Length: 383
Image 1 (cartoon, rainbow, N blue to C red):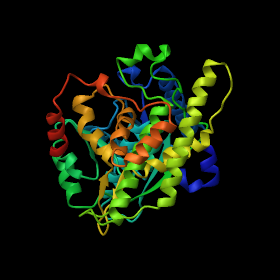
Image 2: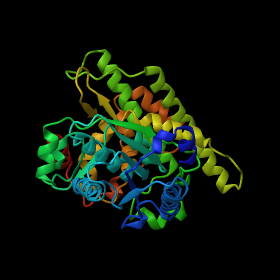
Image 3: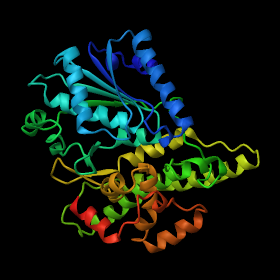
Image 4: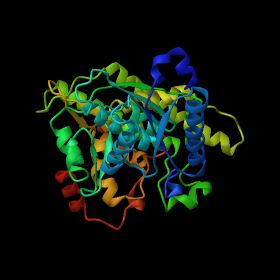
C-alpha cells in the first residue's frame, strides 16, 4: 500500500474511503489456522498503514462468511451513506475472495447511484489469498442468493430484488456503474496454502470437516478453468456455439496451462522434499501470476453484448456447492471438475494424468447425503 501510494499518490487520495475486509469465519477451519492468521495479519497491517501512515479517513466493513450476500451489499451501502452521505469516492477490498467480491459489488452499486456525477468510483483490490487473486481479476463477482441456494453473478442485478426492493428498483433502471479498478498483487502479502497432500496426517483432523485446498488443489482448479476456456475457444472457432464469446489469446492461454502443469510438478517435488528435509522453493511470483491470469477465464464476454457467461467449472460450483457441498471450498470444487473437463479431450486427459502423479480432489466425501444424479442435473439445468 505504501509503495503504491508513493508511486501513484492519486490512487489513495481519498476523502471518503470504504474499506471492506475479511475476518475469521465462524467455521474457523474453513481456511485452516495458518491461513486465518495470515489473512488477519494482512488486514490489520493494511488498516494501520491506511490510518496511521497514510492518514486516510476510512470506514471499515467486515465479512466473515465464505461468500457475500445481497444483504452484505445493502449493509455496506447503508453504512457508507450514514457516514459519508453520497460522497464515497473509493472502495477498497483487502483479504480473501469474500472481501474482494463484496468490494466489487459495493463499488459497482455506488457508481450506479452517483446521480449523474462525472467522477467515477475508484476500486482498489488487495488480495492476500489465491481465491482472492482470482476474484480480483475476474470480470464478474459471485454473490450467494440464499433463496435460490446458488452463487450468482452480481451483474445479474435481480439478485437484489428480495434483499432490497428499493435498491433493486434503482439499479434496474441503470447499468451497474463503471469503476476505475486497481489491483495490488503484493508478493509479500499473499499467503500460499500448504503443499502437503490431503491424506497426510497433518490434515486428517480437517479432512472430514472442510475441504481446505492445498497448493495442488488450487493449481488443479486453475487448470480446470483454463482447459474449459480452451475447449470453448475451439468451439467458438468452429462456430458450434449459438452464443459466441469474445476470442481469447490462445498463446497466452496455452502459456498459463503450461505454467500450471510445471508448477504442479514442482509442488510434488516440494511435498517430497518436505518429507526428506530437503529444500525446494517454488517461485511465488510465478504462482501469483498463474492465478491472476486464470481468474480472467472464470467468465467470458459475449460478442456484441455487455454480458458475460461463466466457465463450466464455475457454473457447476455456483449451482451445486451451496446446497449439496456446504462444507466444500470453491477451489476444491473447481479442481474436482478437471477430469470431467478433460473428458472432452480424451487424448489430453491421459497425457495430463500420466504426467501428474497426484489426482484432482474428489468432492464425494464432502456431500451432504447421497443425492441422485438426476437431482444434481435438474439443479444445474434450473440455474
